[in-house]
Length: 90
Image 1: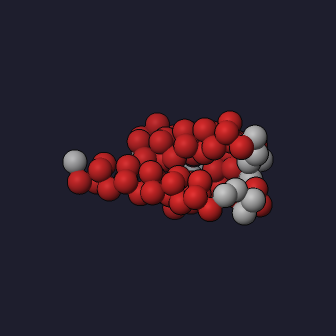
Image 2: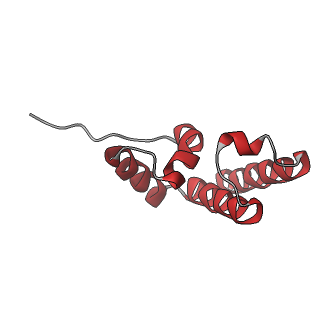
């Protein structure tokens, strides 16, 4: 019997990043995320941005994003969008 490896795509990663950082994902999913991160510079950069945001705000989690200033959220989104645009055009 062949065991199928779980794969993660970018959109899934962005939806689970806080659970990943909080250690709340099942072990098999963590391995799939780690494989994805090893091959995807976009999501690796996104992880770095989220970690930096947590450093600055001292918080993680989707509920905490609502408490962040809109200008900070906008700046983070712009930075991520610009990074992805540069990577896809180069």
